[in-house]
Length: 187
Length: 187
Image (tube, rainbow over all chains, first blue to last red; front, side):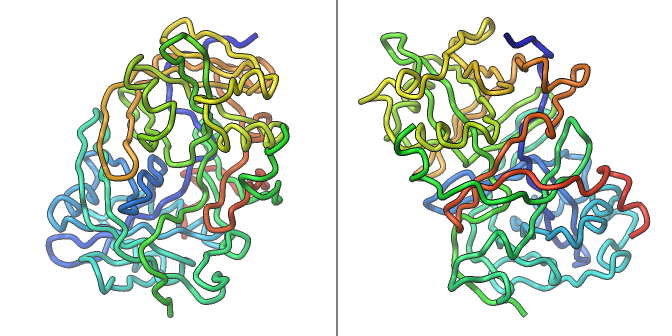
């Protein structure tokens, strides 16, 4: 028997997406976002929701482009930091020592040190409420050779982490539970 | 130096969302979806993307409601199974032995055995391409007492798992890496 805990935003797992953009002066910026994910297979699209108050919001509206870099466990401190301060007041790449790499397909930078990044052109902008959802078409994916198995990105080499809203904490990747779409054949 | 692997939908972590709906005859159905997540804090909203070919798609359009139940590791087989077969041909609750519980706030059922569920009324329908994105306002959250710490849902008691698209596999929850919005204060 479950009990009601009211309307709120809790869902596990929630990703840690580092959104890369350029501002009006061409300064690269990045912020952490957890409200997002994949939203379409063809065309390949991702969604990320941001408050209008963020510096990144204006950058995406102006440039119609963004990247999503996925940090590995080794970068949990830096990823947390870029969710704390605004690019309006700070150069977050300089502060963290991370490297902005210019995408060759969209007008946005990604994080050189993180294992892979999605390069997206803005496709739809959905006003929901406090958050605006940006849907981006993935035009290319860039990945480090050492996380790749052919052209597939191996999660065990990426070592991503997740954000747990109600715990207010980050968690690493656990063990492999089985192959998708086959372990459940005989429930 | 990263290399291009082409445009595709890969992002870690990706959730395992069990979408609960009723069909035209009132038969409860559930399916697994990984393209989704939280998309707004106020009003609290979640997004889930489905292909038009799914049985669930028609149910959501007709009833303007759905639930998202979050399975724990113990139910990885059942969760995988409900992503494999269609509710058009099968009663997936009967096949898995899981219990449909009628929501008291929206016209949709959730999974009784899973630790918590979000009850959503349809707010927006976004046609993207192969997938249609449904944005639902969370009207209430129901949770088992044994995963709650007050009104907060403890991820360590939920033991959720994630889907890794490029690995085609499920992974469990790893260790706690630190408190969000404080470990990164001095990068």
